[in-house]
Image (cartoon, rainbow, N blue to C red; front, side, top):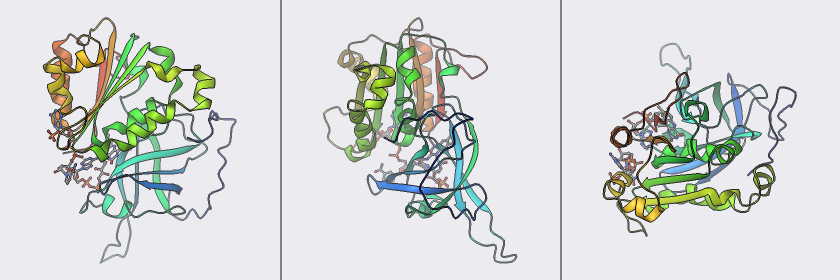
Length: 287
Ligand SMILES: Cc1cc2nc3c(=O)[nH]c(=O)nc-3n(C[C@H](O)[C@H](O)[C@H](O)COP(=O)(O)OP(=O)(O)OC[C@H]3O[C@@H](n4cnc5c(N)ncnc54)[C@H](O)[C@@H]3O)c2cc1C
Ligand SMILES: NC(=O)c1ccc[n+]([C@@H]2O[C@H](COP(=O)([O-])OP(=O)(O)OC[C@H]3O[C@@H](n4cnc5c(N)ncnc54)[C@H](OP(=O)(O)O)[C@@H]3O)[C@@H](O)[C@H]2O)c1
């Protein structure tokens, strides 16, 4: 984790990365890490003026190929959750590699020093402001849907507002859990967060990773594990209670819809920035 310097209007974001801003809204890649043949994460410089709330997403991308007739290039942009917290000097992203995907077939080859286009207009519903106060916060993710929670798990407000944080992450294979598992393990030795939030803040987290297509200690879709009661027994909780539990959902469309229906059956209602309630949801990608 980088230095925990709050970014305010009066604080310039400093970076040693090379400055060769040729593209519109360009930022410079500072590091890249490949987790599996389908997943990677990267960090890049952050515009001094850019503010966002932990959990929001932005549009990022690369220049598209030149039009064969005009020779003109247009930016090729996609929505990405910001995986770093709002106080971080840099921006972090956690990405899929779609082999024939217009953006990620190229984005997966980026290297430190390369430029990425960033439209610095963050938006999204997976933010604390869209939830009413509660005692226990649930993060439900599949695949790269972990990204906004990577931000919120490093956001001090998460621990100030809640007594307990439960993060469930369902992936097909064990290797797809690595980014999240390492990030959560890293919180235990994060001295800066401990200083800001309080020693042992990470003890509020209960991490519940599951896989569906490769053997791991906990197999199955989280939805099925909740329906059978197994997840609640493992976690030592009952089903979500609208009086105390709040939830954020980020996964594929079918997952989001299934979980929404389950949460509504427990009595939770969907919130929005303008109308905070008990849970919020966002797509991890467009199907
Ligand atoms: C609000 C929002 C936030 C997003 N945040 C992220 C993020 O943090 N990280 C990220 O990797 N992607 C994220 N996405 C998806 C992202 O916008 C792109 O779809 C992705 O980068 C692939 O781009 P592409 O041009 O290569 O392929 P596309 O043409 O965009 O997608 C091709 C196909 O690949 C599959 N696909 C796309 N994205 C994913 C994914 N993330 N996981 C599994 N399958 C996928 C889908 O079947 C899709 O139809 C987000 C999407 C939305 C709407
Ligand atoms: N992950 C891979 O190894 C892989 C490899 C090549 C291509 N792809 C393609 O990439 C795309 C995305 O794959 P992905 O694995 O990143 O994401 P995904 O298909 O959304 O699956 C991620 C996890 O969510 C689970 N899930 C799916 N629908 C659910 C629901 N309704 N309720 C609860 N859990 C649900 C899946 O379980 P299930 O396994 O039970 O569906 C899986 O464990 C797909 O089109 C896939 O064909 C994936």
